[in-house]
Amino acid sequence: FGQPDPVSHPHLFGSPDELTPGITRDEFHQRRKKLMNSLPDGSTVVLRAGSVKYMSGNIFYRFRQASDFWYLTGFEEPDSVVVLEKKRSPKGYHMTFFSSPRDAHKELWEGPITGQEGAVKHFGADDALEIGSLTRHLPNLISASSHVYADIHNASSLSAAQSSRKSLMGLLDPVFTHRPIHTVSNTPSERLSFEVDSILLRLAERKRKNLGKEVATLRHVKSPAERRLMKGAAKRSARAHTLTMQYAQPGMSEAELESWFQHKCAQSCDVGDGLNGGCQRLAYVPVVASGRNALTIHHTSNDQQIREGELVLIDAGGEWNGYASDITRTFPVSGTFTAAQKALYQAVLNVQKKCISILCTGSPHPISVSTPLNGGEAAKMTLPALHRMSTKFLADELTSLGFKLDPYGREVEERLYPHLVGHGVGIDLHESSGMRNDELVEGQVVTVEPGVYVPADKRYPEEFHNIGIRIEACFLE
Image (cartoon, rainbow, N blue to C red; front, side, top):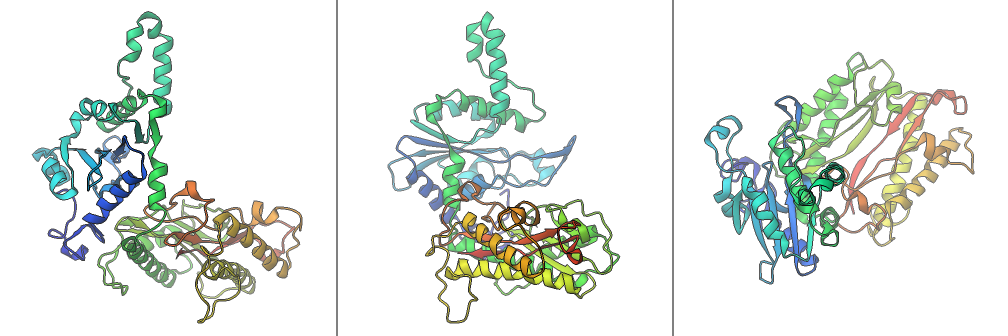
């Protein structure tokens, strides 16, 4: 079996029914069934796994599965394809699983491979074939379909290759343009990807449908199991933030804090949720920005020495059992805010609290114990609408601190607060980004992350120059 299971890694699992830690086999099946039920009759889905990426030569990066593929299968090996055909049956679909075969030599170097028998036994495949046979079988599997849902990875390259063939060889040999497209690629994974794209692009355009959009709709709302995992990722990341703030000292490098945060994320710990293990990886490249580096929203070089009296902005989160967290904290490395730092931090915190109140109650007024939490969905709130409110809240806060802002301009949005107040989070750090304008619904997880970044500009009070502050947390609607 090519990935942890309840027998080999009992410390990671809460139940023998789980296929991945926290998610049962049946939940993965229900995801596939719900997808196929949402599609018209005659539909086929072609779902593609990720491939190993390389730093240079044969030096590889640690593999992370393609998000949609993992969401629908739980399978964690690269270079695989799943074909789902809609059927009128209790199961709702027929699943053909293409993956790597067992290979003793490869397993000696890279570890166990699930193989075809394992794909049927553990992942519910109806048919399981070796990935090397995909290009022979795929055309037959999709030829009779009225709708083929897939994502094409190399459309521009293939289009260029097809145009070249038509303009040159097509003039000499009309049959040539209907042969498979062969493109230059460096790895077997890349060749497979181009071959699959070539097969899909030969379908009539009216038959090809966008798969990512359909899966994003499913991923938009989190199941109870997903919510539990996301809370676990957030708790582990929040603990790492707290310990990193306690560890930080003037004279340290930003890189040292990044390393410490990652260590604490990965560390097994008891955060009170009854689940084991630390984060398997970081959810994104951390920002550790001291002093004026915090004016750069994505300062990821993390190469500066932290000086006495500076603020440090850390935007970092762990990924735990497939789900991301996204947290930002800004703190004084010396342990105490200056008056200006404290005032500006309080301004951003006030904005965040108002935005959280809107999400929870529909009103920016402070939440009390008796306040009913029926906000974002009942108020038909969207993230763009919440962002516009946050901009107004921040402008009011800055004006009270002595900022002279153009009441008719976009100075806050364009210079002092140039990013959105939030985004969806889930398996991906930016989840269902194509649905940003939709109304927030129960079960959706979003960030709330107002910030302010004051350049050394004479238009703004000098005591706030070169201060950047962002405060971010994840919230379940």
